[in-house]
Image (cartoon, rainbow, N blue to C red; front, top):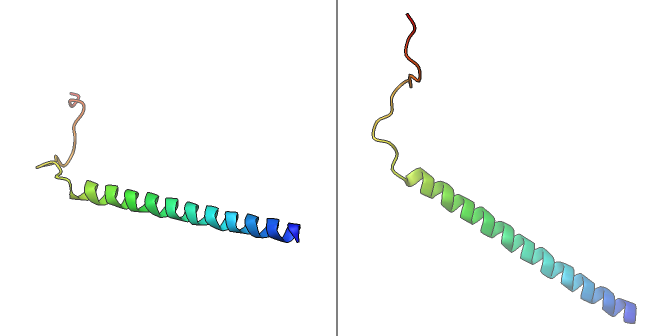
Length: 59
C-alpha cells in the first residue's frame, strides 16, 4: 500500500509541474505577442530614403 501512495503523490507532483510549465509557457507567449504588437504600433520614421549611400561615388 505504501508504494501505491508514493506513486499517487509522485503522479500528483508531476501534474502540478506540468501545469506550472504550461502556465509559464503561456505567459511567455503572451508577453512576446504584446511586445510584437507594441513594436508594430510604435511610430516609425517619417520618411525613409530609398537607398542609403554610405560612400561617395568614385570618379
